[in-house]
Picture 1: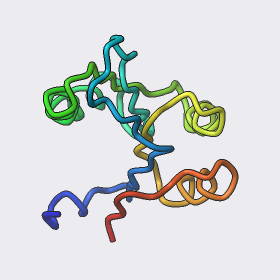
Picture 2: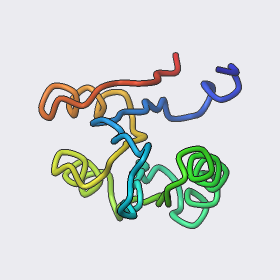
Picture 3: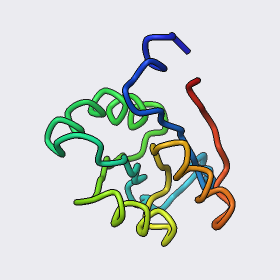
Length: 110
């Protein structure tokens, strides 16, 4: 991973509860929802993650949706409520999600 990605003002960790297999699926799957910590304006945040959304959608041949919440507290509650398939969050909130809900860390920038 390029170091420039890891040098963000907020350390983020990508977590996943597990990506479902889509090979050979006959029924259209619901959109894969990626929850992103609301550390900046929502409009800017969604624009920042647009390339990731487009790339993943093309790679897995499934619709991908980027979501956030109005506050850190709401975002964390939604994360623990398993509202998101994948979460991009701060390291301390990632650890809580890992301990409380069994999320699996996939990427960590240091």
